[in-house]
Image (cartoon, rainbow, N blue to C red; front, side, top):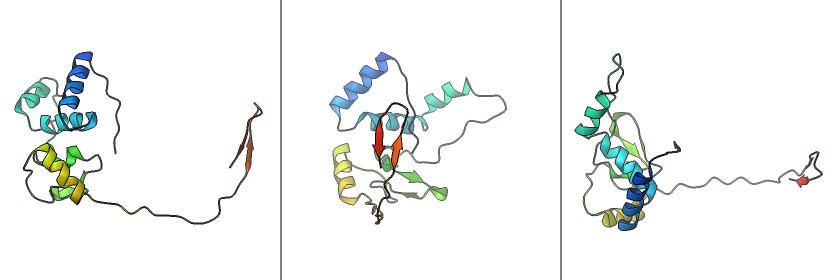
Length: 137
């Protein structure tokens, strides 16, 4: 999962906070949604074309605008052929319903990954540094 640090104006911050308080989406979901939809926006593409390198075409997104699970779930992935795994609810269907309905369905059908447990004894050793602090692992 890519986790960039995003810096933006206080104007955007206020808008994101207002959206956060008026929806059931968290701030990360709101930013992912904006990027998700922007890739399919003609206005976004026109602005980008003014700044693109002359020797490189603009890339096409490899997701469809109705792949809700990609922006709603922070573990969604898309693989070649447009098939996606770990998407919350799409499973090849188009997204329908309100955000609350989608979230409720996502909680019911979300992928649960099993955590692999390791057993055994943890070796202990003492680590000393020059400041006199003693760590025992």
